[in-house]
Image (cartoon, rainbow, N blue to C red; front, side):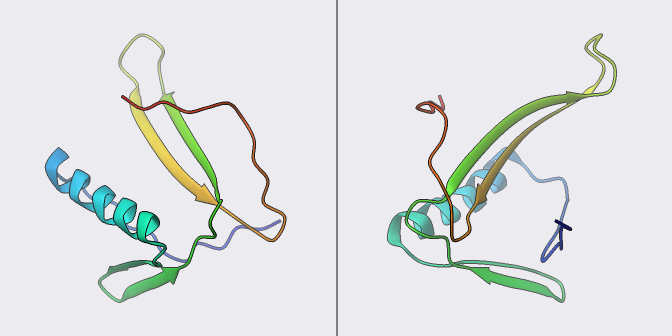
Length: 92
């Protein structure tokens, strides 16, 4: 199935600024509210269901000698047939 990018932005931010964005998303999820994203002339509003699939991924791209690029990705996915999978997640 082809992927259609509805919104995308990337820039360097402080850890505090990133935490503020994540808090807003968390507050909207907790309150049952839609999540609205906007940057420049792009914008999208999405309304996750009560039980979306939550994926957390940590990865290294490039050399394995400690000089690659590290990333942590948080992703919410849902559709009409969304299921529940995996074990209990812990983030510390």
